[in-house]
Length: 263
Image (cartoon, rainbow, N blue to C red):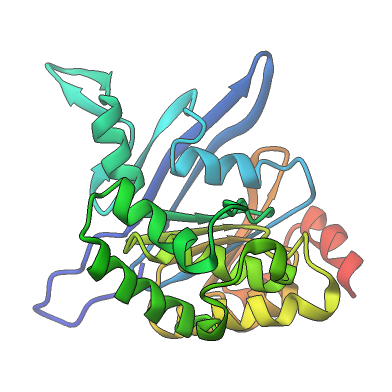
């Protein structure tokens, strides 16, 4: 965590993950993962396929319920609360409220094919948060402009390139005004020549101070944009630190073996 000026109380981390464990039957995919992310930081998660990175993100926004451990977003425990000395599940409406503060962008774009780009961005604020349509439309148009698609507002997903669809997906997540953005390998389904346009939008978000956790194989992005890099393997954090150190001078042999693939 970054230090605060003398006499000024440090702001608590936006995201706290404590001893997170996730099992699918006898298979333990996450084995006691703990870390924190401060407001405005970009954390990049790297590691081989099957190391638990995507499962970790899905646990943070409770698409998967953790087997053990606790997750806090902006000081509030996700999915559970303490009641009379014991941990109880939140009601569905409470969990939905919590999840609305956590934006997520997936490998696949998951846009509604029968809705235009503008309508996809407006869908959740209007129908989940019940915000006024006119207000949401104005915000949605600003967000499409922010991701470079103001002139594609009335296009349907099938009329957009993969990179454009992913940028609509980012605008859609931002429309909920999240405190935290999760990206699960957002460029892995894209042709190499259009990866850059999605990464550029993510760079702009980072520059604007958005708190982000990014699962990625784009090492240049992690090095240039990330504030911290975590290397995961076998469901545990093997190595963590500033990108310049982890990516250029890894201390663990397993990290060196993984990064050698990108040399």
